[in-house]
Image (tube, helix red, strand yellow):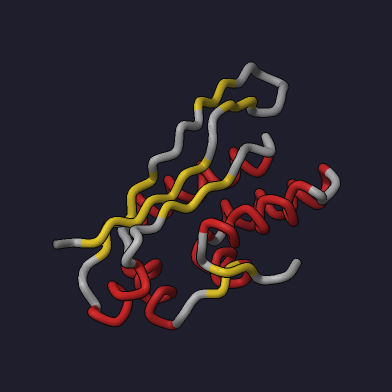
Length: 130
């Protein structure tokens, strides 16, 4: 898979690349993102060293939540969305704080002996600290 830009369009490109995979290959990706979210993200999304360090600095429980939601989204071929503030590139230069909000609307269900089912979409939103 080709690395995509860290942008809303890049996330849609990632969605297209993932969901053209057959179910077996997509399951490999879903398991990989669940196993090591930061590594998976840095291997599939064009991130600066600062962006990778930002991800590595997030609380492990939050990373685990991101990994779970991403894996569920992939397995169910749910939409992937990234929302950035209009001044995101300026914020990078200013080094102002950024809030990472998992605004996903994923609702999952399961019964014994079957695969997890889910509806909704994966939504990552970044907000700039004033």
